[in-house]
Structure formats: structure tokens, C-alpha cells
Length: 249
Length: 168
Image 1: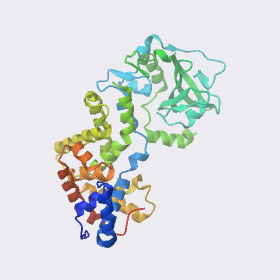
Image 2: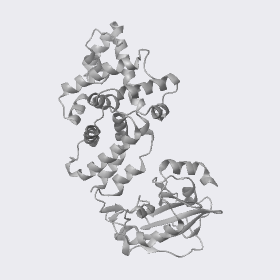
Image 3: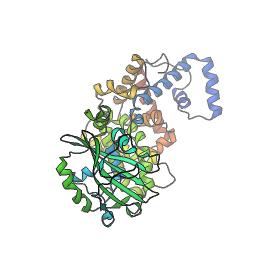
Image 4: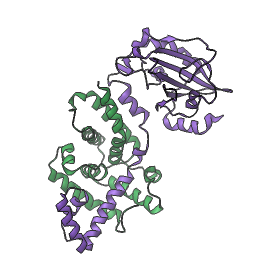
């Protein structure tokens, strides 16, 4: 049973909802001091507001779902323009075009370097405890992380493959005007970069990596994903579980 | 397409999901609603006036889509999943079992309101909009907002039965 009040309930509600001027609010405060039944109603309203706010606040503590983020950042509603960044390559296999006015700029680098730094993706095993290794091990998809050496690294997606997992990763080095994209897979001895693409960052698109869609690069890498037997990217929850379980090694 | 527009929209998503959750009662429907609203917003970016509040604009889009969806579905009320309500981490801030029960009561009570009442109560009590801002979002007279709010609370408060003070 809701409390009976002396003051009009709508006025008390306006007080609780912050709809009053300071002078009006002061009058209500004075009134409440002498009318405990009205104070009880105000308490009830405040408690209800707080309960409602808490009851639905879960989304405030969660990352933006990848699906929604991609809707906003990943494509025009008509699908004509897509971003090179943020879009898992494997999604291209599901019918989504990957970037690429980069077509002329992209160079597939089938070169196995003898060494590699934190700032570039190089084919071959990933050295333990490097920024790349740590990112592949622990970084959720879609969260850019600045490396100590300057470039930004981000995992684009985690792909299930028959014998484990592969992860799409990009490294953006603005100082060097370079964007590296690669696919690293987890083997018995750790992570290994299986394929890389590289391009001058300045040619990656018209604005912050947004480029006109074309299938060129997708077609060049799709057979590689097919050979891997890669499935669609894990959702955030499945990926978090895989990270928490140390990739089930 | 403005990149800043997209970034601002992403930043707004957690609050949009909260609003949509309060309307729909379950996160899956809420996310579908937010997704549809974002698509509509991107298509109609030109209609958004720079310098005005994007949150109010998006609340309006979500509310419109939700009402359209309800009309198509010809159903009434939000579908609260009892299991989801009980397991929701929306009660992270509620440390005591009785607090969690209270939050579940709040979700169920919200679901029992009419769409009009739930929308107004959500915008005012959860999203923190003023009566005037709520009236603008819903394109209603402020008096209608206040009357719907009053009826919503008259229905909701007895169900909560919280005369012992606020949830801490």
C-alpha cells in the first residue's frame, strides 16, 4: 500500500526528480522535517529510482557488443563502404567484403624475417613475452593497446580452427606510416604469424582507415583461411572463455 | 559519413542498451533494438542537428522502433526472462540477497507497466532526463509526461514495497 501524503505526490516526485528550483526544493525540505509520512514517501521514491537504475545497469559494465560496434563503425547501412580496421577478415568469408582501395598498396609479405620487433608483424614464431605475444595471449578483440615502443596493436578476431585457434591482428605505426595485418595461429610451441599484409598507413583509406570496399585482398587471403579450416569469429564471451582457459593448452 | 558521429554513437551504446533493456526486459531483444536504432541513425545522420543532444535523438529512435515492434508483434508488455532476471549481473551493486530480490522485483514491476508508462519512467528514473527533456524525446506535452510518470509510480511502488529505505 502506497503511503498517504500531506503534500501532493506529484510535487514530492518533482522534488525527488530534481525538477524544482533551489528555493522550491528548500521549501519541500522544510516541509519534510515536519511530516514524516511525506518523508517516507520521498524515501520510497528515491529507493525506487535507485532500484530501477541498478536493475538495468548491466550494460554500463559491459563492452559494446561486437555486432553493434561493427554496425556503427564497420559498414555503411548499404554496405558500400567498410573499414579496413576493426573488421575480422574471416567475416569476409561469410559474404562481407573487406577493404580495399588499398589494393594497389597492399603487399603480401611472404618473407620470413630472421628477427622481428614489437612494432611489426613478421612471419614465423612469435617470441615469448613480446608485446605481440602478450596481445595474442590476453588481449580481447576490438580493444586497441598502445605498445611501449609507440605503435598500436589490436586483435581483430579470434578464429576457431580444427586444432586450436588463430587470431587476426593489426599493428598501426603512425610514425612509420605503416599498417601491418596478420594472422597468427597457436601451435605446440606458441604463437606463429602465418600470413601478413602490409601497407603504408597513409594509403589505407580516405579517413582514418575507412576505404572503399573491394574483394581483391579478400580473395587473395580467403584460400588461406579455407586451408586453415577457420570458422566464424568467436563472440566476445567465447573468446573471453578461451583466454581465461589459456587457449585450452 | 562523419567519423566523429560514429564514435559518438559508439560511446552512447552502453546507455542505449540500458534504455532498451528497460523497455524490452531482456538483453537479446534490447541489443536487436539498439542495433536497428543504430542502422536507422546512420541512414539518417543528416537529420541529426549538430550541437543537439545525440542521446535524446537516439532515445527517440529506440522508443519509436520499440513501439513499432510491439505493434507488429501485437503483444503487450516486456518479456522478462525470470532466469535472466535472477542471474543478471545488473545486481552487482546489490550485495545482500534481499537487494537482489528487490532488483528482480523492479524488473518484473517495470515489465508490468504499459509501454507508455515504462518509457517515461525509464527516461526519468533510469536515464535521468528532466521532464522537459522526456517530453521532447517523446514529443508529448510535459503534463502528459507527469501524468504517465505518476500512474507508473502508483503501480510500481506497491509492488516494490520498499518502505525500509533505499537499496545500498
